[in-house]
Image (tube, rainbow, N blue to C red; front, side):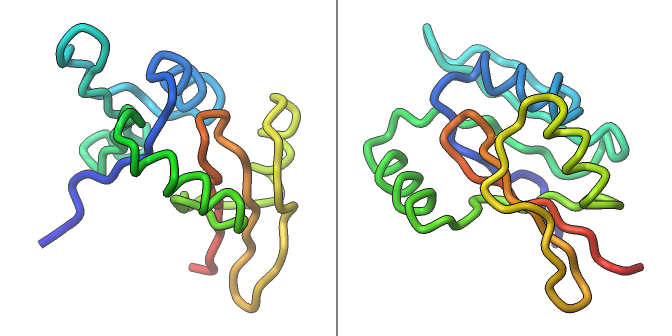
Length: 130
């Protein structure tokens, strides 16, 4: 068994696609219309195009807003993305205008930072020793 798909709730799929591809560097994998407004819209890492897909899920369900608001209010990231160097990725993203809620912090053997994905979520980046 392996993880094939996970999701983040987003307010605007077009804006989320722009942020996740143009800013974070993911690549669009699937874009299938679902009704008049929503899409089955996934992105993947360019380093693993056949790897785990991230679904940019419309946040229309009433529970999604309460869930995301509670997580953001408590400063809890919804998802975690692995990077090779948190400090370098922090600098790259900050230079692109990304707002961080936690600058890089060493936590024992890992380094983390947390940013706002502009779509209603906090996302953590992490580097772990090989």
